[in-house]
Amino acid sequence: MRPVEKQIQFLLKMLEVRRRVSYLGTWLDMKTENYECGVLGLGGMGSATLYSLARRGVRVCGIEQFGIAHDRGSSHGETRIIRKAYFEHPDYVPLLSRSYELWQELERESEQKLFVQCPLICAGKADAEVIKGLELCYQRYELPHQRLRAPDARKRYPQFRFPDDFVVYQDPVAGFLYVEKCIAAHIKLATKLGAKVYSDERVVAWREEGKGVRITTDGREIVCENLIITAGPWAVRQLASLKLPLQVWRRVVFWYDSANLSDYAQDLFPIFYVECQGGGFYGFPVINEFGLKVAEHVKPQPITDPDSVNRELLRDDEPPILSFLGECLPQFQPRRVKYSVCLYTMTPDGHFIIDHHPLHPNVVFAAGFSGHGFKFATVVGEILSDLALQGKTALPIKFLRLGRLL
Image: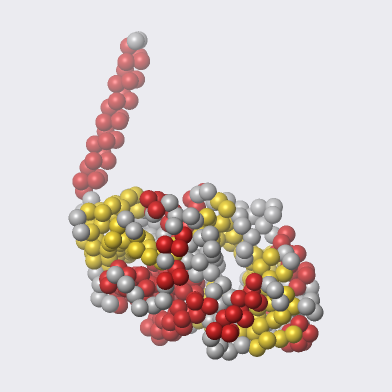
């Protein structure tokens, strides 16, 4: 070996030694912090869980790899629909009743308007999933609603053009939640009650240790009696040993201006979900300068890694939206104002998973909210707190347990 090569190898070895010494020094400098509960992920579910625990007097911390109310996951985009009549499954209705109560409590405690009541119409052919699901729900529960024939729906809302064979249900107790404001309110109230929040901090690993759980982040070591995982699209990574049958879907939401935008204002135009030949589409009335918000709900677009999702507008993202608008809202003249990419974490049956980790009794988790979970955030926070502190909950979640998928 030539002298120059030996010198280069020596320098490389010295650099590696310095790197390892530096890393060791950083690791030794980390203080181990102790809590009763740790919450991994502070999106919709995690922020509500942090608040639920803090208001019970629990010494709790929350860890979020991004900022609070960020736009990288599933809990952003200004608004989310909330409704009691649930076509996905009638077993959700008792959870929604409790969720409504808790959203109202959050409004009172935060002194903010977070929940806006607004009529919702759901439309489709008589054999459409949305119509069959709603009718089953209305058979089991006494919930206010009105069934409209397509001509009557067109008369009430002339902005829509529904085919004559469509059935339309109007839900007068639905509305929408200001999603980022809800998360921020939960976090603010939780910290006011003593919760500690570590944002922009990534969890490197967690493991059982003695009677608790040790969490290693890229900034600290945390030991807690119980760990609650609400990691959204990153749940697969944080729950790798379970090999959960989850898919992450990339979805795109659009906002549009139009020359006749005032016809779609909240006092004239409802929230909507329409199941038509092109798929399932939902939207919101105009509430700000960004215009009409509309998106496609159920078309699969799986991705492999939430860290590397393409957040640029792709060729196939917008055409289905424009086709739907032309078919069902023909008077609307869409001019795109903005768009946002969000992520659905899908289970095989489209229902949530809420349970204890079967291999680690001090770990509970909620995952797979399948694009319809945010409205449940408050009650999910209560359920996860119950499971972590008491080992059980009085709320009816049997149909959401992990066992159904194993």
